Image 1 (cartoon, helix red, strand yellow):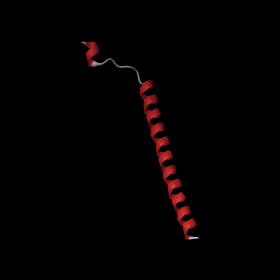
Image 2 (tube, rainbow, N blue to C red):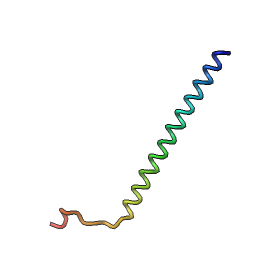
Image 3 (cartoon, rainbow, N blue to C red):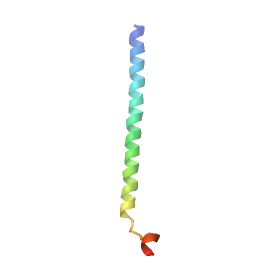
Image 4 (cartoon, rainbow, N blue to C red):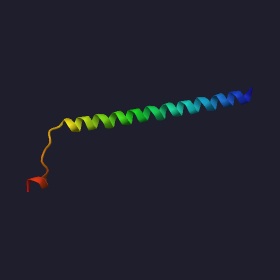
Length: 52
């Protein structure tokens, strides 16, 4: 009985950790994609080197 409670607790902690890990990854990738899309939509400005 105690072993099954311990196993269930371990599985619950592992599941919660995986949920946090996957959610963090999705949030990170969404943020990177949003920043990249915003950067691509900005008009291209010549750099200081190109003007010389």
